[in-house]
Structures are given as structure tokens and as C-alpha cells.
Amino acid sequence: MKKALVVQGGWEGHQPKEVSEILASALKSEHFDVEVFDTLDCFLDGDRLKTFDLIVPNWTMGTIQQEQLQPLLSAVQSGVGIAGLHGGMADSFRNETEYQFMVGGQWVAHPGGDGVVYEVNITDKSHPITAVSEDFTVASEKYYMHVDPCIHVLATTNFDDVVMPVVWTKRYGKGKVFYCSLGHQANIVELPPVQNIMTRGMVWAAK
Image (cartoon, rainbow, N blue to C red):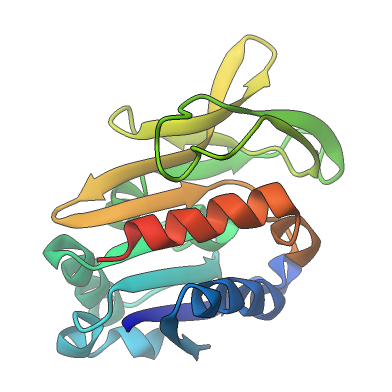
């Protein structure tokens, strides 16, 4: 049985506990043994981190100490997968550029705030994460992001004439990285197209 570590916390507006429960349940349905922590100190033991197949950070903003961050980076570089969504993964630890490099992007703005109606376009239907997905419409925060040009984009949305990645993968060392910018709160994560992409993305990223 594969092992996953879900780490929840940070800004409460993103409902970290509720979202983590949805993600943990999805992983359990895929036969993962899941541990959930609400402290970044679970990153302190680098050897133990490397026993997991997948790490799911769900921690918006906040700060992380180097003795917590470095074991996390090392674990992913060694081959542990990492997967997450929205600000819980791509608006964490704003001062830590190496963390942002691992993720492949960083939140910049969400023009219009919550409740913006927009379309998510699946751009790679050959990838196992999005092979069964179709374009869909969502009413939520629409993330404008700074992104690494090396990411492999699976889905996008449009800001006027700017095509903005919504779902992507990349590598960080030997580790597989998966990210989805959807998921402002639990009701968005529960939407069938979002939950499907998240579940398949987490399974894909696992070591």
C-alpha cells in the first residue's frame, strides 16, 4: 500500500481542514495509507519523509523554517511525489523561491475576487491525469500566476489575450510534481471535474 502525507494549515480562508479531508478521502479510495498533520514540524525528519510515496501540502501563506523546508525539498528531489492545489501549494511560503521553483508557479492575483465565472480548457487529453476530462465552467477565484516555462500544461484558462495555465506537471529532481490552481474552498474541490483531476493528479505524482 502506498503512503501519503497531507499537511494542512496556514490561512483559514481556504478551509485547509475541510479541503484536506476531501483529498485524504480521495487518496484512501485509491488505496493509499494517509497521514494528516497540522504542523510543518512533520517535515523535520528527512529520513521519514522519504518513506512516503506522496506529499500533499495544503498550507496557504505562512512561513517555513529552513530545518522544515530543506528535508521537504530533499525528499521530492529523491523521488517522493508532491501534489496540491490553489493557494495551499502555490501561495505558500512567499519568501522561499526554491519552494516556488519546485512547484512550478506562484500565485500573483485573482482579478474579480471569488465568484468569477470562467472556463477551464483541457489542453492535453493524452495525459493520464486529463485523459477522461472535458472542458468545464467554474465560478470561483481565477488565478493569475507566474509560471515556470518548463512546466507541462494540462489545462488552461484565458485572461483576455493571456492563456494562463490551470493544471500542470513538472519534475523536481527525481520527484513528480502536480498542481491545480482550482480549489479555493471545499465546495470547489468537491466539484466532480475538479475532484477527478485532483485524484488522478495525486495518483500520478506518487512515487
